[in-house]
Length: 499
Image (cartoon, rainbow, N blue to C red; front, side, top):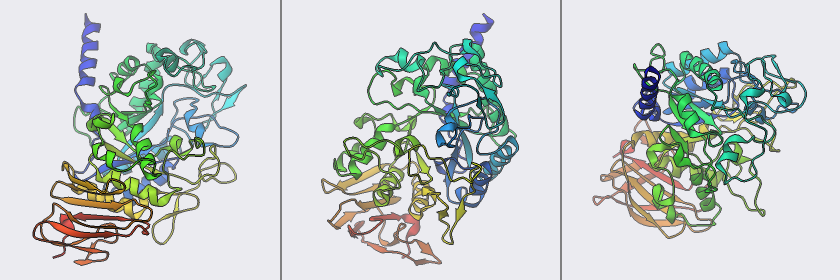
């Protein structure tokens, strides 16, 4: 009876909805930035110097626990756990604690990506970033500890339509943990609760699609409330968002996970890629949301690309995902994502790479090198830092200003010139055509006046440093956007009215 009562309480806690709250510290804060492969020291500095002051709500950090040291120091080693010690490529536990505290103080929440589906692969004896050893072929990880009885039977995913294969078989050579065992979940919970005690606000569950929803539910139910000493209100639940790449194979459906937390909406990334590479017009994106088969916006995390998607092979020499390597198209895609109301946006912050396995910028000893900046505040030394592009910074201001406002008055030319309003607060227009300039008299939903375009400049000391746009008494404006521009976008806000 007592045990049943505890289970009911746990299920009620999950269904209460706290796991959907991102816990943004400021009203105008919005969105997540994924500082992929950054060190704890650099994340701490970025929270204070840039993310907090520019309205970013949270930072997603790479897995912080001990992982396998791979010969080429690939980025993939982050996804091969050796133990749950907080000692990985990004730094040690002391540096992690300092980073979390500083980010919270700066108004930026920290979400940790956690790998719960599997342990490290490899042959013979493998060593970890904290000095531990493991024997993957024997399924023996003494530092956790896990042994052969903690894993699913060896099998390979052959049929992605089979839920049992997807959830019970291993990916590549990485032994697949059995989350159906209470002792396995308890070790994971102990690790995650330690992170909560440090002050993190939530978790990104890597490869959630490869784990049974009921096992994850049982695991989440044992997570402690967020730390009051870290500034969270009493009884706050950890924010949960789950990696579920659902392409209608049937083996793992994204809707199976939405009652436990938010879920990644991969279809958006593919659809916006199709639009940017001119394989479909922009018009269908008018229906961004459930009409396109997406998750409800209050359950989705949306993104243009991710580490995995950036490295997808071309299919029949056809690009699928738009990335920083196609900067103009990528900027337009980011603007659309940040201007639209759909989902909680996650912005990728990358490093450059020539091969799919290439790790982050590092020194001769394999240590990740610190992020450096030029005089304009842009990253150097192999770091791309899309989140620092001016167009992203300015769109974060726009998104923070239009929170809660509907998407209305969508107009397009049937192809790739689009404009819409966010209530009566903001207006955005962009020209994704290759050779056709945008010339139109459009309803902006804004009061009459002269407005300063956010993308080309902004208001400084009462003066417009970019393009100014005259809105007449009927709320209409002549909009011209050349197809030759690197950033063929105009964004207006009521706060950027100069006359």
